[in-house]
Amino acid sequence: MKATILPERPVIANKTILRIMLLTVLVFGVISASYSFIFHAYAGDARTGSVAVRKEIDVAPGDTLWSIASKHAPEGESTRSYINKIKKVNQLQSSVLHEGQILFLP
Image 1 (spheres, rainbow, N blue to C red):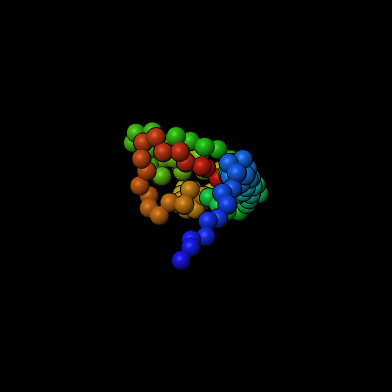
Image 2 (image 1 turned 120 degrees about the horizontal axis):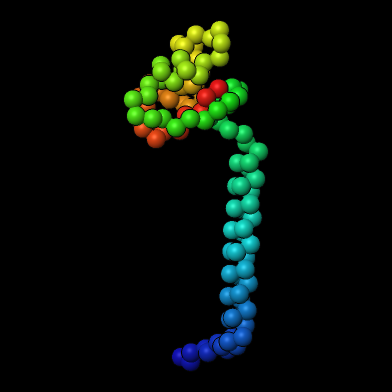
């Protein structure tokens, strides 16, 4: 039985195919990254919900939610309700704070 020998592709054709494949992957990657950035830019900030952020603070040693809320709560608002807003805006499940943590204040 005689084996069939297939003609070899020229080296130039192989390089062209490789370049086209790499270019396709690169273009797909750029489009995907662009879509991701655009989507996140227009998606809004889930942390804040519908409450506007007025200020950012850096948690200092010894700070508690109560001490921060009592200093920064708008006039006429109770400290307890302001704490609830701070927790909502920052998506806090507990009242534990850590030194250096950034808090968004509504």
